[in-house]
Image (cartoon, rainbow, N blue to C red; front, side, top):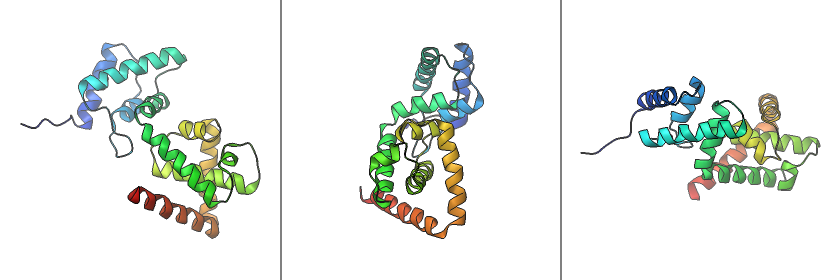
Length: 184
């Protein structure tokens, strides 16, 4: 008889049960993030792996002196999803090449318009092609704060809506990145 992993609702119930048993304050958003299953972010699927993940979250929370929230769950997931960081690096490299700037310029502090635009496009593509948090993307792009990355994402979305040339660049990058996923 084949055994299937529990459904998301069951995983959520298990996480809630374990959190209560361990006396952990676990917001619903963090619980849902921990139990979601997508191609980019497979969830912890077994009861044992869910309990272990909660214990790791408790340890991270204590070590970093911060509450358990969706950002901390993203940090834990990033440790278990090394491919996501590789994907983010591939996106950053493709954006730098497309905009004909060095990769270091995406990570640097330069405020030249073309570099700021390229950074925004890197954030935009990263959010669309991965499940990476703003904090994870910010870490890759020169250790930027998640609020800076969020601002960049909002700003570039407005610019894409208004600028057909920028929209064309973003579309070209989408084709380039998705084609390399299929062939690579």
